[in-house]
Amino acid sequence: MRYSTEHKSLYESVRKFVADEINPYVDQWEEEGIFPAHELFKKMGDKGFLGITKPAELGGMGLDWSYDLAFCEALGEVNGGSIPMAVGVQTNMATPALAKIGSDELRRDFLVPAITGEYVACIGVSEPGAGSDVASIKTTARKDGDDYIINGGKMWITNGTQADFMCLLANTGDGPAHKNKSLIVLPMDTKGITVARKLDKMGMRCSDTAQIFFEDVRVPQRYRIGEEGMGFTYQMQQFQEERLWGAASTLRTLEGAIEDVIDYTRQRIAFGRPLLDNQAIHFRLAELQTEVELLRSLIYRTTEGYINGEDMTRLASMAKLKSGRLCREVTDSCLQYYGGMGFMNETPITRLYRDLRLVSIGGGADEVMLGILAKYMGTLPARK
Image (cartoon, rainbow, N blue to C red; front, top):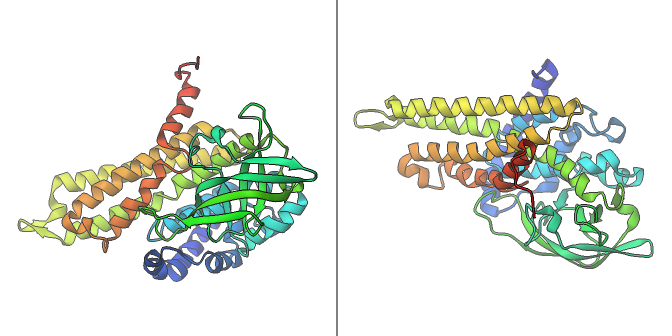
């Protein structure tokens, strides 16, 4: 897969938007512990950035996922991981199933304003006792007439304090764990929803992350996305885009970290010469740059298969795994070469070191990716 003139034009438009509308304010948002999602998303919606792959008849661009990839790569120019993650939730985690199989009513009432940026979306899957183990969620949605009555809670919900609606995964039956769940669009102003707290995180400081409780929350059954009992399958399909987005969003960020440390070590004099003159340093940076380029090739190959309608679970899992590992490796190495300044919060590498640690956890931990790959390889021991 190669970027066309149209891909490059989109990339440049996003890069300019980042330079004008995001990076000048990131430090302030980090200090405040939140960014103005409605204000920023509306600006992005006005540019068409939030509906790149969404149907044209609903206000999207109707393009294939390779254009979302270009958009995602360009967001890697942001000085930190919070905003790309929050945007990814809106475009590639909370809305893919809604766009593909949601009813006309749901798409009109929720997807359209998500594309324009008038609504902020969040995804409600993780719970205190069920993060990567999606099948173990406890939140229930029981039928009562034409409604569902929802009880339970969700944890680590990105955009959770500002969201207008949630794409909720809940148990709607008592059957097998992989066949008793449904995806439901849940307006966040519904009675019985409590945003318990905004979580205090190590990194991703300006992305609001919430713990949310549901007590007898009533929502119409027509707000269900697709068939009842198919929610686990739909969520696994959404994970393909989520994991691709998570991996792709790190490419320019990692390259930026390497570029920054090259500039720093070129100027930093130690023992009478620039730090960069040490072979151990410039060889190590060359190795890391090579690893990033290899990750890009894997992501591009995965994207090509995805837009051709192939099941890319295997390669998307590899990309997610490699990205998480590489984020830790690159940021740790770059921080080391900053020396004492690398331990100071005023240095950009410290933010990336904290922010990118999440890549190995969110959207399925490294160990879950390894388990998926072991299944494809036929090496996973059978459960007794």
